[in-house]
Image (cartoon, rainbow, N blue to C red; front, side):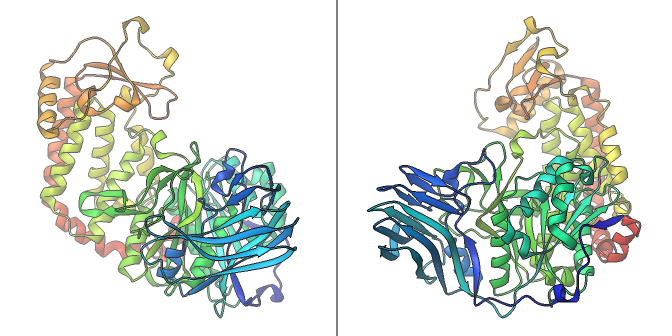
Length: 623
């Protein structure tokens, strides 16, 4: 079911918007979209000042600079990937007596230099310029202000470059499942900025849940601002892959947008804290790249909003690993304390917010119906194989739930395991020996740590991979139910409130980890023997989350481990019968995987054209 908000689009609305002489690449923003966000992610002020979203007023004698996360201009990325050879930064100033303005730059080591400057004695528009000719490996630009002789008002700051011959239209697709208040807030954030609202051709909200976004008061209040641009679609829960693909499907079906054949599309999570400025920066970058380019936003942590998740990511397909930090990229770093000076090139970008050009969808088709996890990895890898690179753009970000607050022992491990095998089989020649050896070790670590439910979930993922491409026929609906149901027989998968956990509090003894083992494989064998023979420390032990490593937890036979969410605890107890049954099952499954992996890779590769086809997705959508 689909509905639109607002009035019908006229032919005049479809005509191409006039292309400006200069394109705004980024605006000067001085405060964030929520009170929890530090203003110093935008501008640092030494002295008394008054901030507004797009304006800053400094008292006499006060200095300020935008050498900050959102205040910097990523010169290295613009020089490397776009046609821009010079940028201008213009601003409107109200000058009490005298002001100094500097356009500063850094190099790969963070050394500061002045590119352009102005002494200003009267109100008006000031323009500074910088060639983009010395930033290939790293460096950025920013502004510095001194209110020398009186108050200084700064507004309408805009980084611009010569505009391309035509402006590529862009749409947004938001996938949501029972996070209605969060999704409504994201839609409202897009509508809160007139420049962002006017830059968007369409917004698709794909609702796969039962707690409906359209029933949220904030959504109903916001919808009229979009007019005909806002589209609300309900469909079965097909996971993130199904929700985002619906957005790609609709936009690539929509015909002419503003004179272009199709619009680029920004995929955006429902539960982010949205920085609307990021939308403008992604769109501007995509309009000026030398070739059509996937442009991803970075992720800042929602609970620790000063911290960057990672500067850029890649996947190690031969090791079934994604989310790997690119060499020299920052990870888990406070952006109040450090800036990303180096240019780091991404292998793919996760879909918390990522722009996908229309040409990519036309060339490589739609994503795989893998329901959840690895869908963004596969699409980014497939795009690169077709000649489309991904750029994760600094100073363009959204806030997303911190990953390390999510416990690894969860039903999502099913999709992570199954889909890692599918995606890696499609895009590299997996070595059966290496893969099975790695999986045996991983499962062994879970077994000695008494995570029997996690082992079961992992094995379910491998077993379903062994079924071949037919496992993807329903888009993952049955797999989700089975993964959740399969954990019911394993008590340690249950999270208990710590104050009422089913243990005797007087029996608990806290045990801290003494450090990483120097020879982990040898320690794993030793712990397995200890667990098997019962030579473990008796009594109930409590282990904090930071110490809950397999080599430490496996010293005990009964342990209460803090859940990663810090909202409760899990109770693990040694169970030799379960461990034995799971070990035998592991051996059988891995033997079969070792034997059948080459043929399964062939089957999955042969099935891709059908799986990613519009006809297959239409079937899943019930169209």
